[in-house]
Structure formats: structure tokens, C-alpha cells
Image (cartoon, rainbow over all chains, first blue to last red; front, top):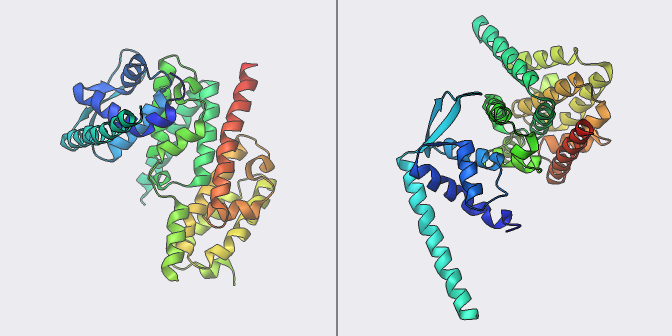
Length: 108
Length: 103
Length: 118
């Protein structure tokens, strides 16, 4: 699907939180997961800026681990604050989606 | 600032510059342009160097993965930059606040 | 009254001297641009020199990096140094300028990368 970027903007952070919440993972693998999910326009750079923000806001625990080839990789895991944020994201998502569905049912 | 800090600072800076020079040409171009943009915009992160070091780490990973630089950051490099400093204050913000505080 | 008198405190004076020392290492046309930048930022400096220092530092770093890339000074600052400086300090027209810097960034990257590929 084309042109998802604008609509996805506010929810991408939640998606990244969800992915990190299910396993300890590094940036490139997160991007790959999102691409495989069908969000093909998401590039590493976008995920990097999100991870940077999560780190700055103290929502993740970061561990540097050596990789097979190339520089060490930063692995991310949610901490308590991150888990709380993830919960809040899903609550907001539900709030919005219920209302939008309602709107659609009423209109069609 | 002691002599040691200055020497460490210089060593650090030299190592940083060496890493930039080791990047492929396309990465180096984008890195330099990003740097120029941030010197104009002036986010407070410029003070501790973490912003550029983070970008460099990120770019090195991209090189190792065999990606082209725009494939990595997307075509809208400016949007990437603005996302990097989203929510942070700039020196211009701080300056303007100090002016308003005087009024 | 000059900039020296409006900024107070010896640490600022020292910082300022360090700026000037860095500036002397720039090519001549860049040095000229630096003094223009100082002149244009001067009305701002009168109010609060301290908070202007990081902005001046950014401008100087911009000049240093651009000089080492051997860019023409015009390519870096454009025609309107006064407007450029107002934007650096977050003054009038800063938002428009930020948009221009954004476009400049993407445009330069596209141009330089295509030259590389071609």
C-alpha cells in the first residue's frame, strides 16, 4: 500500500515498542520486522530516530553486543517505564480505533 | 578544563574524523551535509557530541550491511535530521527565551 | 560600544578569544564572512552575550567544516547574511529559513550523490 507514511507516523513508535517488548532485538532487525509486516516504506533511519527517542525518554535498556561482521550492535529491551508506555499505546490505539470503526459503521 | 581533558578531547576528535574518512563516499557526503544542517539549526545535543557519534555508529552499521546511504536514511534526509532532534531545544530557542525573560 | 564590552565575565572573554583564534585559520573570504556574521549577530549580542555563544560556535563550526570541504562561501551562506544570522538566533524569519536549510540539505545531497553515481 502506498503513502502510508503520514498516517503511520504517530503509531510507528508504538509498533517499535511492541516489537521490542516481545524480544531483545537490534535496530536493523526491527526494520526488517516492520518491512515483512508490510510497512515496506519504513527505512532504518526512521527506526533509528525512534530508538534514539525511546532511549532518551528512558523507556528501553540498551546493551552493546559484538556482531559477526561490522561494528557492535545495540540491542534494545523494554524496561518498566517502556512496558507502561506500551500499555498506554495500546489503550490509545483501542480508544481511537473503536471510535473510527463506529464512525464508519454509522456512515456506510 | 585540564590538560588531560584537552588531550583526550583532541584524541577523541581525531578518532572521530578518522571514522568519517573511513566511510564510503556517499555516506561521507550525507554525513557532512547533515553536520552542516545541524550547525545552522543548533540543537542543544551539539554540546556533548552524542548526536554525531550516534549517526556515525548508525552509518557504520549501514555500511557493514552493504546498504546505500539513502536506502538507509530515506530520500528525505532533512526529515531524518528533524526526527533526530524532535522535541529538543535549540540554542536559538534558549536565546529567544532569554530575551523574553528580560522583557 | 563593541561586542567585547557587551559580553561580561572573564570566561566569556576567554571563549571569545578562542573563537577569534579559530577564525584566523579560515581562508580570507571565510574570515570576511565571519566578521559579517559577528556584525549581524551584534545587535542580538547586546542583550545576552552568554546565550549567543553556542550560536556563534555553531556558525564558526559551519564555516570551518565548509572551508575544509572547499565550498565557496556563497554556497554556504547565500546572499542574505543578515537574514541568515537572524535565523541562526531564532529571530524574524527563522521558520522560513529553516525550511530553506531543509531544502538546501536535500538538494545538495541529491546533487552530490547523482554526480557520484553518474
